[in-house]
Length: 356
Image 1 (tube, one colour):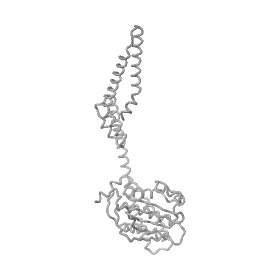
Image 2: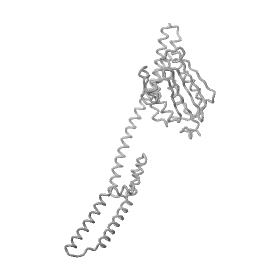
Image 3: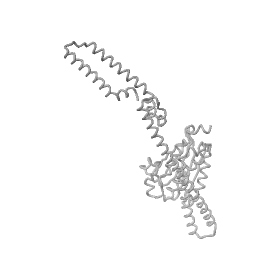
Image 4: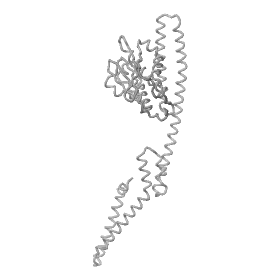
């Protein structure tokens, strides 16, 4: 609060002060007329000046006594912090001390309530994480059993059934992985390690993990890289990003009825950055949906048409890229395909200081 604000708040007080002076002068004038005594204008003006001077001194002293309180309030308004409450001085008047006591009481109640919710949230988070990890074990066992069954001498129809089951298991596994990472992203700062990574090596691992989906859907993955394939990132989170993008590419390429379906991954250098491009010739994204594909739970026209989109994949990709310091762009033409670009800036990582 500035001194001008302080004066504005006390305008009514100042107004009544001057009204009281005027009333005193009027009473003195009436008394002088009644006694038939001449009114001394000089004395009246002198008295008014003395009163105004006393008023100014009073307001100045009162403001100086409360100035530290107002400064603490201003700091609280300018910053998104709550510690200003504890920085308010105790030597102010009783009214301000009562306000400080009330604010401190409310703040402690807020902190205790928030801490209670944090503990409940942490408990739910741990339960969900354990549940997901427990589900991963039977999924892995089912995959191994299917692999063994496929190696046996079985008819073509049974083999196709096994492949369909395997594909659905992959979807389930992918969904659980997405849920696990969506839980971890809330504690992102506690779960990352920045290092130099061979991004093409990660791409190969992701493609290998999705090889059944590529084979079943007759999609041909290709990799092109003429540049140094080392980038600065977090291996686990980057693998998740690439896996989400490639999974989306498979999802919306397999539904397209064309002879040659492909997903092309390339790494190239641009000014002050390395760019990983993942291109497919799938159904593409309608132009009206492009600006919203990174929004949480947005499925768009394709999601409603093919009933497999959760609207969380690209949202998580964007969220993670923002936190690590990478850029992400998407270009698409409906009916032609989609290109997603991950941009690794040479000097724009918020975690650069950690690796130096």
